[in-house]
Length: 175
Image (cartoon, rainbow, N blue to C red; front, side, top):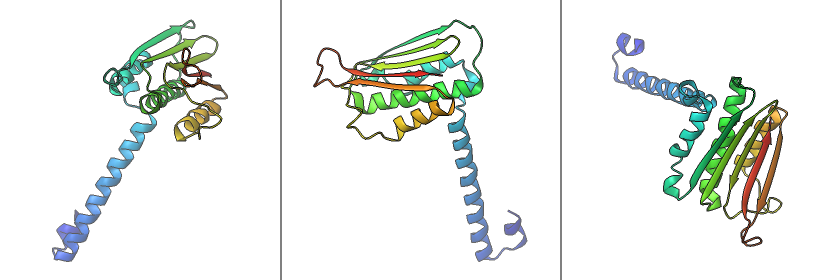
C-alpha cells in the first residue's frame, strides 16, 4: 500500500498489487493451518459434542452409515488440550477412512476415560488385511499421534470375503 501511494508508475502499481495479494494468501494459509492444528470447534464445544458434530460434518447418514457414540468419564475431570485434540483428530481420520474405504453401514465410537483413556473406533465394513494393505498417511498419522503420547495403537480387521458373518475394522487406542 505504501509503495502504491508513493510511486504511481504502472510497474510499481503492478508489483505492489502482487505483494499485497501474496501477503493475503500467506495470511489465509496460515490461518487455515492454525485451524487444522487446533480445531476451532473444540473452542466452542465439549469434545463429546465435537465428536457428534463430526458425524454430521462428514455426512455419514447420507453415506448410509448409522452412528453411535458411547462416552464414559469415570474420572469426571476435563481432558487437557493435547488429549482433546488427539482424540478429535484420531476420530476424524478414522471416520474419513471409513467413509472412503470401508463400505460400512454402522460405526461405533467409544471413549472411556478412567486412569487412562481408551478410544475404540469400530465399523462393520469390508475390512482388509493389514499385512497386505499399504498403510497410508491416515493410519500412519494416527499411529504417530498415539506414539507421541506414549499410547498403544491396535488395529484389528476381518475381511468380508474371508469372514462373511463377522467383518469390519476395529481400532483400539489407549492413551
